[in-house]
Every structure is written in structure tokens, then in C-alpha cells.
Image 1 (cartoon, one colour):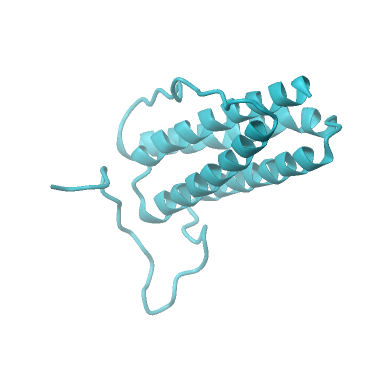
Image 2 (tube, helix red, strand yellow):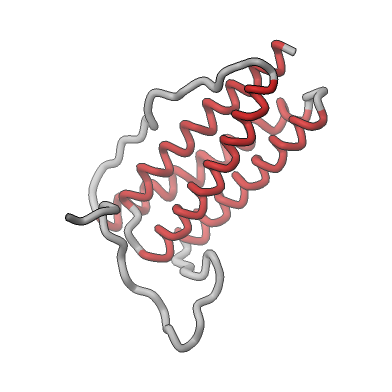
Length: 161
């Protein structure tokens, strides 16, 4: 039971670090469709973290916190956006590669399946990142013809006073 708890806590910490990195990335990715995709990924990661936190609590543990994202971005504008998207694509694949063997070796079927779902969503996020790098703007679906393509940018902060 302690091995399972330790594994879930480590997974939680790793996933929380990814979420923090993606929050930082979203600040640099201002193209509207790409930023919306980051918001979708962040929403999914928050749900995933809640699942793992619940599992940890049920085992009598406490989710371990990560200190920071460890992200360092060089440059501004399109160069910075490309840098973080490339890093996020690589990081997503590395996360799946690092965790897949450990999840496949888990004896607890319920928690293993939960982590497999999360790993599947990590790989889906990697696909989004790769499509953004290819310049695709239909990441979350096609725009209605009457609206036309989006070329806008999001604001750098959520609230303006």
C-alpha cells in the first residue's frame, strides 16, 4: 500500500509540474487558437490532478506539492511561443515514456486505469502541440464558415483594471 501511495504522490508531483509549465507556456502563446488549446489542456490537467489527489487521500496520504515549473523562456513573441510549444511536445512524450512502464507494472487495476487515462490525455496534448507547431488552427474543432479564420491574440493577463 505504501508503494502505491508513493507512486501516486510522485505521479501527482510530476503532473503538477507539467500543469505549472503549461500555465507559464500559455502566457507566451498568445495566438488565439493555440492559447485556447492551452486553456483546454490546463482544464484537463486540473481534473486529472483532482483524480490523483482523491486517490492519494483515500490511501491516507497528502498530495506532494511542486515548488515551481522550472521553465525558463528566452525571447519574446513568436520565438518564445515556438520554444515553449516545442518543449511542451517533448515533455509530454517524455512524461508518457517515463510513466508508461511503471503504470503497466501496477497491481492495483483501478489506479492503473486512472493513470492510463491520464497518459492518453498527455499524448493527446502532445498531438495538439505538434499540430500547433505545424500551424494548424483547428486544434479544438473547425470554425464556422461565417466567422472566418482567427488571427487574433489573447491579452497577456486575465483582468484589466
